[in-house]
Amino acid sequence: PNVMFRVVVVRKNFRPLFVPKTDPIKGPVEIRIEPRSEEVRPHQTLQGRILDPAGSPIDRAVVEFDFFYGQESNCGGQCDGVDLVSDTDAEGKFYIGSEKKFDWMSIRVEAPGFARKKFFRLSSEQEHELKLTEGAIVTGRLTKNGKAVKGIGVGMVSVDRSENFTGNYDTYTNEDGRFAFLNVPPFKMYYVYSLMESSKSDNLIAPLRRVRVTGDGTTKDLGDLPLSFGVRLKGRVILSDSKAVPPNTQLYVGREGAWDSRNIVLDANGAFELTGIPMESISLGVRVPGYRLSEKNASLDRLNGGTIVGRVESDTYVELLLEPAKFERPDFKSRPPGFEWI
Image (cartoon, rainbow, N blue to C red; front, side):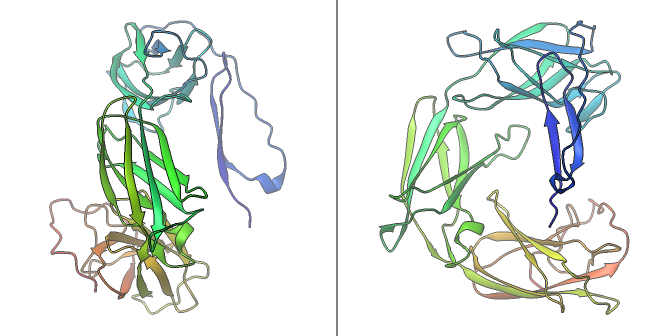
């Protein structure tokens, strides 16, 4: 099947360009990028240098726009009129331009061999010197009945999902069942876990392990993380008007703490069955054009309206009821009655 991508092209002294809905099956894509002016426009430019702990410049560091604020701007993420990404030159310099005036901007910086870092509220009125550090190392071993297990995906993600979120990391165990995460942002709490997709064939899963990472240059060894059998999750997606669920409709299964999810295609009756589900809080979501999750779902997540949430402790059956309606943001004044599967 065709796979759609969104491509970003970054080259020094040229404006970065995002190319949405890129289909590799259709052949080469012609991309034209324009030279950009390095003119420092008042309140329309963020500039600075990315340095290592010793103060030496870091070349090819990636600088990503996160948020900006000012008289003409109050936006984060995909915002029109602003360079969404830049990279540093041999002197560690970067430049992010904006069509709108702003007072300050927050950015994310990442470079090989250094811990990724966010920098907040950088003024548009001065050039900044921003330092990255080496970060910490987190290691461990996945086991089954005390024996090492190779080739299993392991994930790690920041517990804090606020503006201080440091992102997620994925790796695989080696021949000895060991894994390592390098250049981890220090002084943070993380979840470490095995990935559902890589262990679904044998139904084994390593549940969340919470870990505190301390200073730069330190190593945190988690020891053995035993794999255990997950639970079975069965269910069905039902349309309230008794129509059939469209072919190739997918159900999303996500872990509430981990940065980990699976998708499964529903059968002709809207039914599904998954194994290897951890005994944790999970969320289930499904998108059918012209429908939304009904409020009759007792476990509806009323904070976003697009999923149902709950904790599984054993083999479980669940039904998701969808009703004809346009999806709308929920009323945040209402409170969920509790999380119970319908």
